Length: 81
Image 1 (spheres, one colour):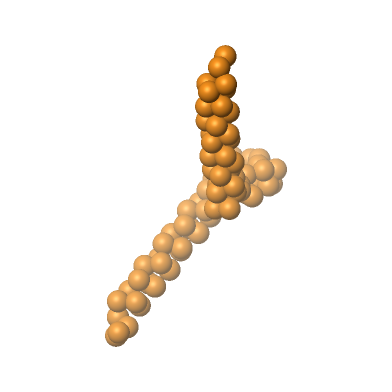
Image 2 (tube, rainbow, N blue to C red):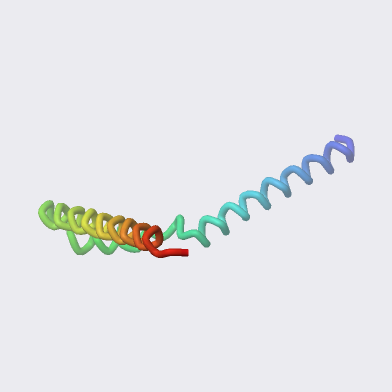
């Protein structure tokens, strides 16, 4: 192989490696890999009823967060500038 092709392959592989590292660090920073409750819930709630209760509780949490966000948006609209 010629040295030009070898240098180009080395450059492209280094760029792709850096891009992969950047994506990994970004994912870690934004919490993409965090699933704190998955294994804990699996150990604690191994019956069908417990799993249904856990899903219902999670839905209630999401609804509460959504409602709180909507209230914050309404408060921002009401406040004069």
